[in-house]
Image (cartoon, rainbow, N blue to C red; front, side, top):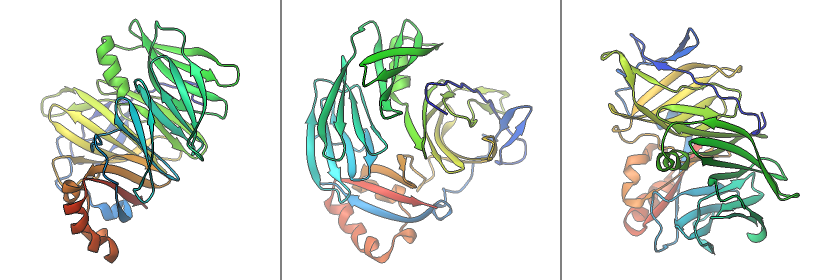
Length: 342
């Protein structure tokens, strides 16, 4: 489905009396929040192997830094004004400077889009050279997300006066229009925070965009996923923030933040797009499956090397990676973990 066609679907999360397996009842996806898995996620269920990439030391780079992945390496936001490029071996290659970075996105290994205050900068990812500038002349909008959808179209999300807007930017004609708008609760500050946690992800030739607010996930896609969690014991809806939604073949991965705790949810979906089972894990259990960026059947996660034990099961490491494990942990600052998914 093209990103310009908005299909907002809200599916409620309620609890199940018996188990953690999800099911569809009266159009609602059922999951038992009271009984998440008592075990940590078994990475052998989802991963074939794990590889560790030590990044060259870079002042100002933190594990929580935003990043994008493309075939040649990683684009990481070092601070509010600069992006750094590391190749697949973790070697520093280049730094790009801007006045202020609002958002950035890579698109199908062809371009890097950087949203600045009043423009979008485009870079050729093959050479990482500047390709052009797209002006954003209407200052009445607060522009918050950017990402490519077609060769000549860039998707832009913005908000103004309590409304969120989905826009298409024609890179040839240099024109931006907003075919879709919607109401969303919250102040400008809260909207900025909500949309700031959102992002694009890709599935074959299809592109998807999601954003979440107070437990609701809105998406441009033809599959369904949940939006609320029901606390059966207290018989009331639980305030939930859904974030970092990722899709891998027939599975959806997402983080759930609730007043009862934080969870990782892995949902299996049918060919027709409906969820039919779910596994729910408490994020307090370690090692758990960290959601970074899923790209080309690999989940990339950036972490501090001292925290590798939280995210890596050593039984999945081959002998070479096992030999490097303790060295990387003691001598490196930042590690990119590559979970090769089944």
